[in-house]
Image (cartoon, rainbow, N blue to C red):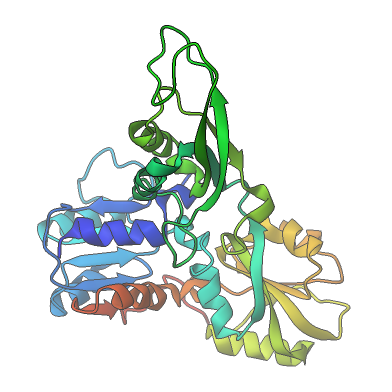
Length: 365
C-alpha cells in the first residue's frame, strides 16, 4: 500500500480543515507514492523515536505534535526541528502529523482521554459551528441516480459510517424556455412541467466548491437550480473542542484528585479549590485548553482538566469549579495508541506500532 492511500483514509476520519489556523498538519516529510513497510505512531518526534522506527522496520511515523510547526528557512542542524527533519530525510522516513484536527474530532484526543476516566454522556465542550451544509437541488427522476452518485463521489452524503445518504421527495417543476434556451425537455416558448426529485445531501463546508462542480457536471439541465444552507440545526454532536462527560460515580474532592493523578500518571497537580463537596460532571481538554475555561463555566461542570494554565488564569475560576492543570504530555499521552488503533482497524495487513518512547521533556522533583 502506498502513502497516498493511508493519507486518504486519515483525512477522511480527520480532515485537515478541522485544524486551527496556526497549526501545520498532514504530510510533513516524504513521498506520497512510497510503499508503506510499517507505521509507528508517537506523540512527537525525537531521535529515540526515529531509532525505534528503524528497529521496528517502520518507514512511516505519525505524530500528534508536528515537527515542522513554524516555517523552516534553513536546515543547518542548529535546532532540534532542523535535526529531526534532516534525519528523517536521511533515513527515508515519511512523517505525518495529526494535531489540532485530531483534537477537534469527537473520536480524537479528548475522547481518548475521556475513555481513561470512563466518562459517559459525552458531548463537545465547544461545538464547531456551521461545519456542515446541505445542498438542495431538483433533478428529473430518470437522472437522479446519476446526480446523487456524482455528489457522493465529491464527498456529499457521508453521515457517520454511512455513505450516499440523501433525502428525496418527488414533485413537479414548471418552466417556460425562451428562444435562446437549450432545454433538457419540453417545448420552447411554452409552459412545460417535469416530474422531478427534490434531492438533499449534506457535506462539510470545505467541500462546497467541488460539490458545486460535481452538481453542474452531472445535472442534465442547462441551468440547474440549487440552494445551499447551513446545517446549524442538526450539527454533529461529535466535532468540537474539548469534551464533557459524567464520571461513573461522584467523588469527594480528595479522592477525585487522587484518581486524576493515577489516571494521568503524574506526581502532582496544580488546581484551584472548590466549594463543591462532590465531583462528577467534568470537562477535559488534552494539551493547552485554558481558552475553553468560559465554556466549562457556562456548562456548570464540577471540574475542568487541561494543561499549560497560566498563573493569572487561575484567578478567573469561580468557586463552583475546580480547575486542574494535569500536564501537557500527561493529558495527551493516549493519543498515539488511539491513532494506531484507528489505522489497524482499516489496514490490518500493515504492521502498526505505538511508540514506547517517553518523550515528555519535563521532569518532576
